[in-house]
Structures are given as structure tokens and as C-alpha cells.
Length: 365
Image 1 (tube, rainbow, N blue to C red):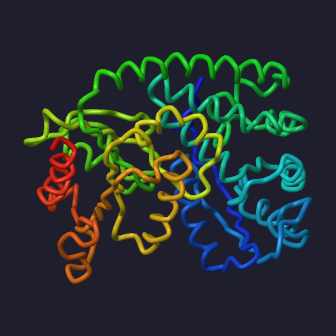
Image 2 (cartoon, one colour; image 1 turned 90 degrees about the vertical axis):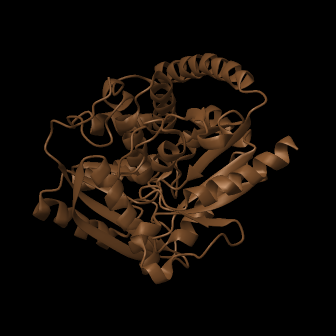
């Protein structure tokens, strides 16, 4: 049972970031801004944030004892419902912090898993998310259920998190095996579908979450997939024939967005879906060119592509959302494989289609 939390009041959330090692507080502020967006997507509202500069995480509270005391005071003052850490917490740290603050404590990974549970619509996406959640929770079973069972759902408790609180390790392990088996069956069906697309030029849309992939996909195919100005609105890969004069030769697939510090459990459970990217003939890497951190996000996307074995697939970089730029800041023409477009305003699309056609002609020549 996936609890979307739509009928509940927004949870009041305190965000915590740590500038570890050489990481600056400015960089941590940026990741906390993204964490705030993730929190809002999950249905929460930021009421306070803390940033601490440290050489390394504290073994007990991740942050120092003094900062933990300050957060505890803020929880009471702001009447916060939960605290979200931007870094991965160990099971012991999570338990210690929950006892210290007497509210629910989760980390960035659990928050992202929660959003995936919120947006999972197809049977495959639900299975993939449930598998990732189970594998995340498995090492955290000891002592975790006691603290979480006092909460009544909400952020971090969607999907199996709410229904499996009292299960033991053996039950969860069996559940993981069952989910993997069910996903294997779906993957076999997906392989059959891939065989049916033999002879087509395969294009995959990839990019950081909320870069505008689904808007571009609809623009190129008239598919009508969901478009939303929120993180991870698309979880299911959708494949359609490319529009225009290439309709008989090419298919294009919209894929799940990437994000910094993407939980490795999600990458693993969505690996079958991401095979579409690995097996593509051409990747369109969609970038929000109005984002001040676009270079950093391009780096994240390239890192994930390498991780799934798609680093060597030919790709075009598509600078989307040029409509949000000052006219003097728009990238002129197509330089070094960079193509500026506005999928929303439908500008630059012909230039993109021409670049795709060049790859098509080369493939079928």
C-alpha cells in the first residue's frame, strides 16, 4: 500500500548538511537547496536548516554534539516533525539521532526512495522502488522499527516502510528475493519488446531530474507523458517512434532522471530499465541550461552513465530551457555537439532533428 500523504498536513522539516573535508559551506548550501526541493516534492516544508563544517562525520550523531544540541532545541522551538540529513546515515547514527530529537530522522537516500514511492505508477516501477526500499532498510532493521513504529506514516514511510515495520530480517530477505524474481519476469518481457524494435535506430533521453526530458519527449513524439515541474515526475521508461521524417527509422525512450547522491539501491533496482540507455544507438543528454550549476549536474549524469555501462554510447548534449535565459546568454548554434532548444517553446527542435538525422543517415548508410 503506497501512502502518498496527500491528505495529510505538510510535515515540518529541519534540514541538516555537513561540509566535510574540502567541501565548502557554499557547496553544502547548494545541496541543501536541492534537499529542500526534494522535501517539498515529498510533501514537507522546511522550517530550519543547519550547516556544520567538519573534517569527518561524528560516529554518534554525524554532526558534533554541540550542533546536535542546537538541532534538538530547534526541533522543539519550531515544532518540527522530522529531521532530514543530506548525507547517508549509518543505522546507529540514525537511531541515536532519533532518540536525541525524539522525532523521525531520515537521510537523503531515504527521502529520494520516498519520492520514488510517491511517483511509482506502473507495476514495474512499484516493484523496483519496493526492492530498493527493502534493500535500504535491511541493514537498519535492528532497533529501527521501534523508533519508526511510533510515527504515523508521512515522509520516509511510504511503500513497504509503513507495512513492514514489524517484520524480521528473514522475512525481508525473502521479500527481496521474491521482488527480484518478479522483476526478472518483467525484464524478460522487456527483452521481447526490444527484439521487436530490432532494426530501429534507438535513442535514449537522459538527464538530471527536472531538466525537461518529458517535455522534449512529448515534443518529439506527441506521446502525452506526464510533464511536471517537480523532481522525479517520470519513473517509467516510455518508448515511442520519433516524429517527423524519421518515424519509420527511429524510436526514442524517456527515462528516469538522475540526481546527485542517487541511492545505489535505486540504480541497482532500476538497472533493467536503464538497459534502454546502455543499448541505445544515440543518447540525448538533456540539460537545464538556465541552471547555475549545470556543469556540476552534467558531471553527475556522465558519472551515472559510466556506472551503468553507457559511457561510450554516442551522445548529443541538448541545452533545454533557453526560454529562461537572457537572450545574450543563449548558446549560439550547435557547438561541439551542444544544441540549444526550448522544448516548452518548441524552438531549436528542427536543429535537433537535423542532428539526429545525421546520426541516422550514418547508421543506415
